Image 1: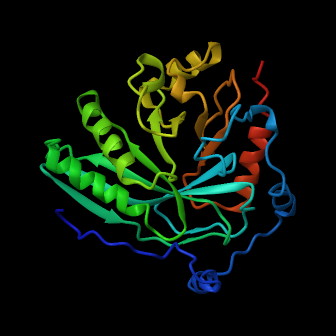
Image 2: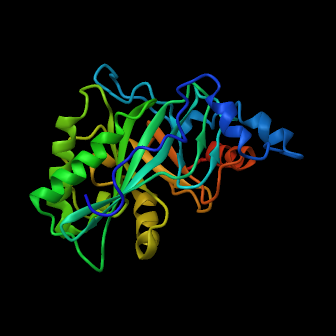
Length: 291
């Protein structure tokens, strides 16, 4: 690969009982003033009105994952306050940049601290270089797939998620990556992908992808945001794969929801804090748009 050598950094792992204490020793002690109400709310999940479970979970690789998952992006995240039985964490593990014929790998450089029993999903973000567009060759496919698959071997990781905002001309390449990746992953390892909300409305190219979950991101939608929100206010996503999970952000209005979901992924533009999570839980709990 080009650029930085592929390597695993482990500031976010908790393989030893005292790892979390070592991490917290490097950072100021978390002080929360005047948020007793917020902290109390953390023990209560949002109203289950939006939640549904599959009729049969026998073959659902993600059945063990909680219905709420926090995205932890490239910033120091101290999530020791979450209930690991009710909330999972999807953390950015590495970023891949497809440039020319190569793949540049950038590992996670910021610490992540979570309770020992937290369900962890490693997220790999892919981006295409605009100045040196990727050639999407078989060699690049092999390099990208290997770089993604390697993350599945990180200690504590129980699922993998790929985040790639592909253009129309890159869809065939992405499909090939996912098919090859599925063959390389352990049979029991869940594979999730994020999706632009527009993918779920205007066509159905997601059908048949070898993934266990598609997470439409109903935020940061740019010029499509009003169209997508109007669409959801009157119906459901066209693509069936998009109807089971949903990605939301704490700093944007919740969309109208016409059907329940198995899982919600929550994004916060800053480091997560107890009060921010409690506020989002309260808002989701008031979600009253279900018929």
